[in-house]
Amino acid sequence: MPEKVLISGATGFIAMHTVERLLAAGHPVVGTVRNPDAAEKVAPLRAMDGADPLLTLVAADLNDPDPFTAHADVDVIFHMASPFATDMPDPQRDLVDPAVNGTLAMMRAAAANPRVRRVVLTSSMAAIMDEPDDEVKTEAVWNTRSTLRRNPYYLAKMRGEQVAWAFMQAENPAFDLVVLNPFIVIGPSHTAVLNPSNGILAQIINGSFPGVLDLAWGFVDVRTVADAHIEAMRRPDAEGRHILTANPMSMADVCAIIEDLGYGAKMPKRNLTGGLATALIKLASYTQPKGVGSYMRTHLGRSPKIDNSKSQRALGIRYSEPRETIRDALEDMARWGHIDAAE
Image (tube, rainbow, N blue to C red; front, side):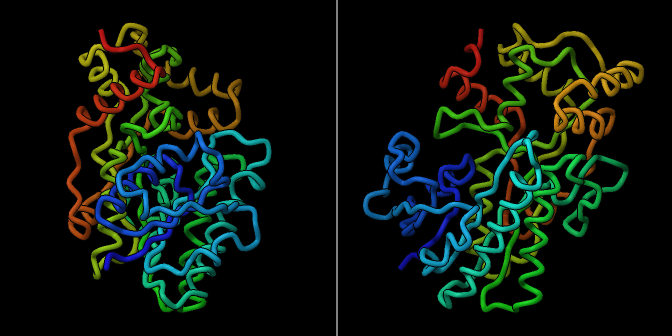
């Protein structure tokens, strides 16, 4: 019989693609959501092939002291729920505490259910890297620079993953832990919600940037990330962390793809990649919201160096061409009305 899987945050961007794959493979799935009776929000999940009878949706809130134990009588757990935002009024309360407490609650729930054999934690490249530098980032590297004032979302992802590994060391539970660390996840969505990663592309297309900046991003297709979760569940020898990203691309390269695909009518044309322009934009970043300003100051003028070989070797991941993923993401965003259709 296919194993039963618990997924936290089942209405999330990555989670929905993962649920879809699990149902297609015949796995019974328990998905946690804030409100299973919110018909519009959960409708895409309930409409998936196999959802009836394989999918059960239950209520869970990361701020509750024990949101998961009652639902963790399963074989495998995907802990995917975590708040995402660049700016919050209180980063400790709104980002770090839910990430840490939610992860600890899930680890305790798994330990309380002897049936659980593996927890797959959706972490982030943010747990590995705060800002790009000359070091090639591998799974052995940890982000040590983020703070509540400097890239607080990165701090939340790092702390959330750290407490999972600390739990494994302190408690030595019967299950094992596999962690996935995706970079910027883009691609088609099951809902009209514009996730923040696809939002970067929408901002470029809609003219939100003053020009082409000296930024570089590592993109990974959401469908590839969902596949990685399935492989992390299925492969007995899967262990440790796994960076998930295709090779990083400059903003100039991304803009060139967007324009070639026919979405460049409002796209920034001014070249602001020079040293003087970068310095001026960093200075202007102090007038931006704290999270945006912090990101600009720590990422402008730097390109990440990343080794993604472990995910290819250990999980069998094959990364699609960025152009294909960007094309699919843009077509989907046009379908939902976030951007104009291609010319």
